[in-house]
Length: 83
Image (tube, rainbow, N blue to C red; front, side, top):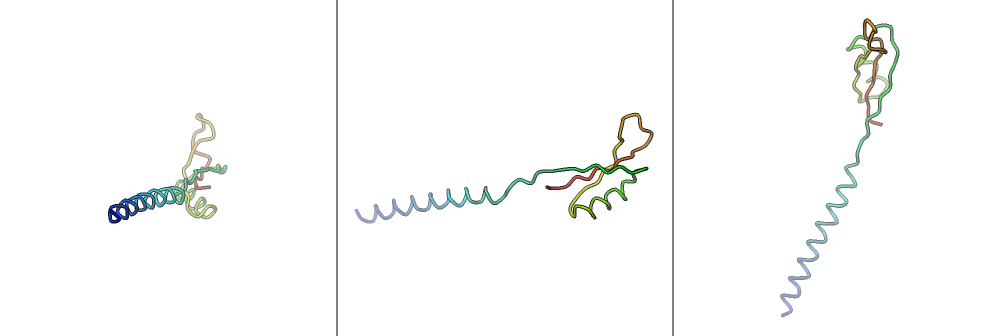
């Protein structure tokens, strides 16, 4: 009789522990939001844009974009990074 009580208590303890560890694991992951900053340049070159973004924000990506759709060439560098 006592053995079944201990087994049941142990099973409940194991399930509770798994649930608590799962909840703590979800909190630790965290969600990193992406932010961006646009920098005006005369003529954007992809390689230079990426280097400039990495210098400013460590882990970042850079992409060249046009300020307006009718612009003849990309003239802005957009840095995308985790904020």
